[in-house]
Image 1 (cartoon, rainbow, N blue to C red):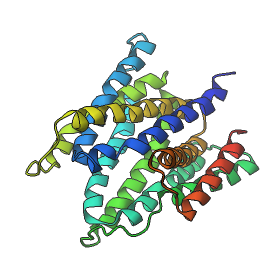
Image 2: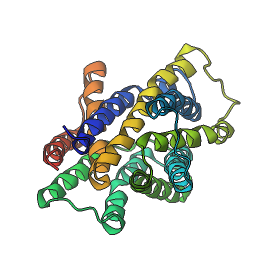
Image 3: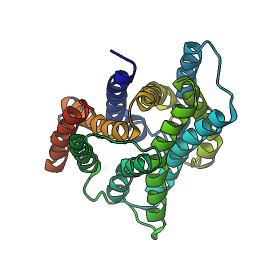
Amino acid sequence: MTKRKNWLFYAIVTTITWGIWGAFSEIPVKKFNFPSTMVYVMWAISMIPCALVALKNINWKLDVHRKSVWLGLATGFLGAGGQLVLFEALKRGPAYIIFPIISLSPIVTILLSVIFLKERVKGWSWAGIAFALVSIFCMSYSSADGSTVTGHGWIVLALIIFLAWGIQAFVMKVANNFTPDAESIFVYMAITAVALIPVAIAMTDFSKPINWGFTGPYLSFLIQILNAVGALYLVYATRYGKAMVVSPLTNALAPVLTVIISLVIYKTIPPTIQIAGIVSAIISMLVLSRE
């Protein structure tokens, strides 16, 4: 199998790690009283060991060309910065509207990739992309959850995240086109994530009790490292595959695995709309795997 064909393998690894991460990511927050902003801190820290592995893979020779550095940092800032904005958006607005808006960020990636990277796919691949987008929307949809709505600023914040994460996948592909190795891009992503830790700490409400035991930061770290591993493999998938295919595919399949794991562990039956999302994601995978 050639490296160019390996994009699907890397995308599947991302799907598996993110799918498992999704099933357990809320446990420290909802069950053990650990703030979501501090979960970000543990995620950023979990990027460090993955970055060290990435550096070892390239014999510790980090690409320091100016364009590679700026593109790598931009990729990290768009992803990590979007995550921090999400915390604020969820404080102000309803999750059941915010997440469906954000979930369609691959549309931005597709448009930018077609316009600026001149990426093209075969006719039937467009159907696979369409099924992926449908699946993403279905899997992120939830009924009204009683979230407190403060003004309309949350809509702006949701749109900022939508654009940031859509542009991130595009910039990641551009970075891969200019950087001799995918590992350097990930290292710069890790640097950015760590650099934004003070912002997450500043957003944390320390007036409320925080669980500092094993089920707090330590459990969060173990769960978040799955996300970090998935991010590393996403960089590889984007390097060898087309951004307009990789982005919707990984965003569609990971939630499917999350739902399946939750079904097994928590004995919860997904609503009809999520079942439709699972079917759409499977169809998308079968179609796009031929790309």
